[in-house]
Image 1 (cartoon, helix red, strand yellow):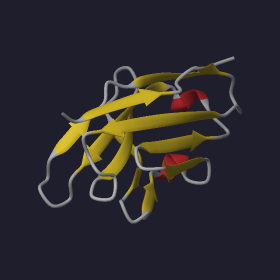
Image 2 (tube, rainbow, N blue to C red):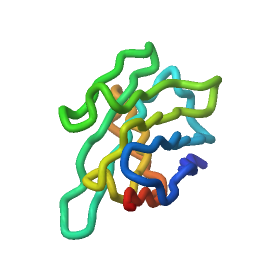
Image 3 (cartoon, helix red, strand yellow):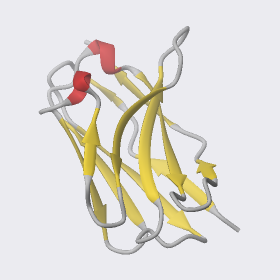
Image 4 (cartoon, rainbow, N blue to C red):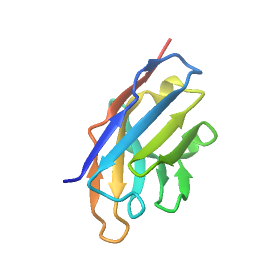
Length: 116
């Protein structure tokens, strides 16, 4: 059974940092691409960053230079978020995508709130 569990969301002041983790079970990270998406109230879910099993990364323009995605060991993908802004407030979701079969799995999300 595939399971993705996000953690690390919190309330942080503007300019602060957070590290989100996505812990995967039931899949091999070397095969799957892992994506971080976010959804703010009233907005559509948007792709924030992604990393392939070989380590290739992509970022949305809104987070380039501030966020960094990385693989930590065999089961965890981290999203380091620096210089946070109120516009970064959202529920952050982890998604595992199999580029060969097209199969996708989602986690339940973790809340990030940036506010003074």
